[in-house]
Image (cartoon, rainbow, N blue to C red; front, side, top):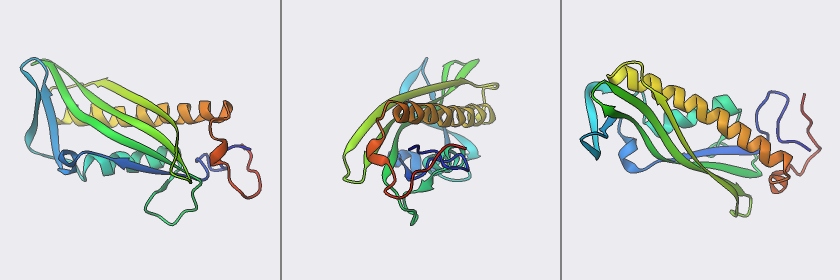
Length: 174
């Protein structure tokens, strides 16, 4: 029995992305690692179309073929991603990268964590401005989707997702 449905999505899994309150803002954020790396700054006049956590969740759902945890889809397991960093980091005034960091947890119907993995994805920014940071972070989000898919595939092959199996008829890969 496999989790991948005919449309390429993960059958029976729903996705939820959690993020700290400071990521609820629409600001495009950056850090100056060479000056004061703990201070989160924002570009004036540059905004995300939605909160970064919401946008990341939408991208992951599209790439992985998963439902929203707020939807009414029947789910056997929850894939929860806890976003810890999502910003452009300047290592020098002329060099920056998009940094996406977080922890994925696979949680069964009994609310037990059955697997987890930390992710740190860094993509170089093509330009040292808001556009360069946004492009790098979008690329990091795509890479996260690929890495999450590979992780879920490895769990499935290693029988780590047995508790997520549907109770109905077996599904097979196309």
